[in-house]
Length: 341
Ligand code: NAD
Image (cartoon, rainbow, N blue to C red; front, side, top):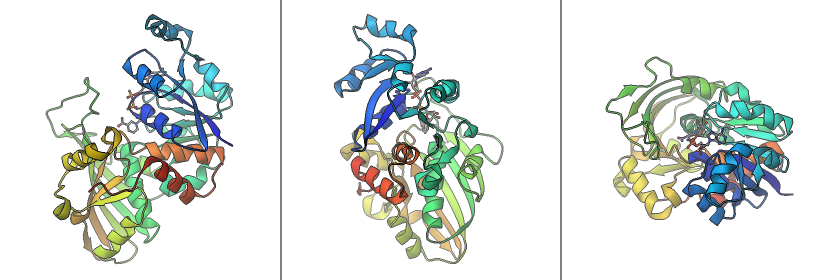
């Protein structure tokens, strides 16, 4: 059986998730909801996506551009099993009653409050908890990156404590109204930052995070310190990370890549939109002192949550009970885990 999926909010995250859903042989993208007409509507139509609008009122801007829409969000909801909401933070909460009335399973993004859904979701950490649930919230890009490293390591050696400094990109490339900033801005100015609480919405781990925003659009970078249940060697850590899906090591000495510009330049040559949904760990930055591991990791904020959304569909719809099988299927369809350097 193919799960019928709808997507509301065709922006940075939504357009990537829509294309990822189209690549799954156990899912069908029934349509996308677009609020106003722009070039991306033509691109979506060229990919055979069916276009819906939030309500009749929005159809006018499409008609003016000569585009006949398939219907409204309500129409779309009537013909899907799962709706993925990728509207701006807080807007998903306004739609929730409509989704619930249509009795469709719901996936929200990290910009929504955690109580919007029955479970906050990370594929490597708690896929099984989402099985058959009505709603899940895929946590934010920074939280997804933190959870990948924590749960990846924890599956082999227990993680007792996490401390992380988050260096956030100031804005996404297309967000002209948010940047550039000229500051290393404490964001937020107090500790801990909300990322620690967001991690704890998925797993009960001792974690403290602080965050700054800087003038870049490419990626976030974290400096993470993990206190483990036993001593390990650097070779142990490398071997754990190499065997964890959706984590990619970059060896700076060999590749010449020493930062986010290098990662993105490598991805530009081989990846659509230079997307890097994998968590990238700088291998040479791994420092081990007994049971303490320190490392730098980079997160491509625009794409890291895409595979998680695909897995969340499988979990809610209960078409795959085994997390590892869903992760492998998603990754294979999206061409992930292949070395870029
Ligand atoms: P975005 O602004 O790029 O896209 C949102 C889209 O929703 C836009 O196309 C907008 O026109 C549309 N929209 C606005 N109001 C709407 C409405 N009432 N009905 C239907 N569509 C509407 O935002 P984004 O960056 O894709 O973020 C979406 C969600 O994903 C947020 O919760 C955000 O926190 C989360 N998220 C964003 C990132 C990131 O770095 N961009 C990373 C992870 C998670």
